[in-house]
Image (spheres, rainbow, N blue to C red):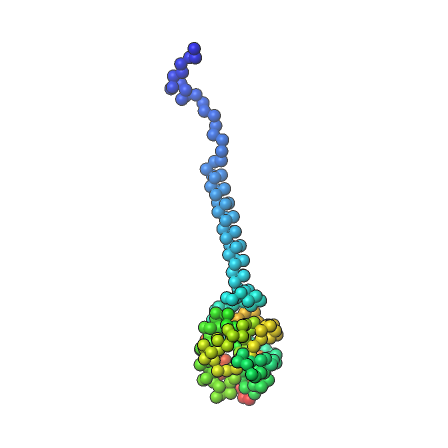
Length: 215
């Protein structure tokens, strides 16, 4: 028969060492996994933001949507001339027709959310300055014609707007985002660039400064 072993003696016997990671090693592993997950989230989030910025609100590739308030940036050189069919139809919108006036040239699209933010302010400024030798002109970029006309009608815009469905003029003016607005002096030279939605309180000082210059 097997000898009877007292439980107190069994408890006193040496136990085999535990095999496994120490608490410190477990903590380090958990921290490494958390960092890896965070890195993946940052990468995926960055790719998503880049996709949204390059596709715009309507999925139009090649245009970033500048959804922030514009500030004046100095520009120089002659404004590239253009002749475009009107969004309204039946006429041509030509930049050279406005030589001798201060020109506000606005690039926009109906799929551009910030373009909606600035539309009413641009119309008010146009109504305020048109009798003082200022001409507003808009260029519609890569847009559906019916959506563009609806945009003009909904916002009650009365100044001319040309249509550039292929986006060629945007490349000529080196646009980096929509909306973008240029201010051109009486001699046809670029003076200011505004990237982002343009508030009338930001635009007025630029127009006043150019109007004070001798013709």
